[in-house]
Length: 157
Image (tube, rainbow, N blue to C red; front, side):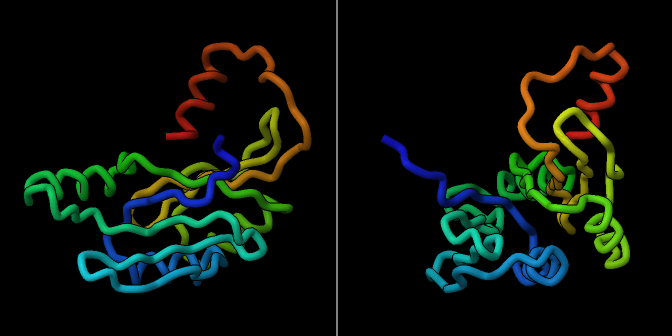
């Protein structure tokens, strides 16, 4: 039986740049950083949440040819690398303002939704990130008209 999610992976194009963004701007902490020979194993996590790590991995698979690796890099820069992250905060507006002041790309401003207030940013490589200030327990979303549904769908892309 599975008991926990402990590791997820996100493609980045430069691990040092990723550290500057995730640690320097978002306030994450480095968990592991060592050379395996064939790759650098670099993980980060949220301070105070030691059980979960994110591997910041270069899209350079030794078993793929150069063309395939280039396709992966291209997809990452378009925000379609297959990964995204979701973080929680106690104050979405305050965090949004702090990130804007640091030059972080905001793709969706703080918006009140049925589950709380959230906003969207991208890392320097194009990976989407959602940050949510929860409204507490919530159930199924309320009925939405097609315009509201389209707006919500687009905000997560």
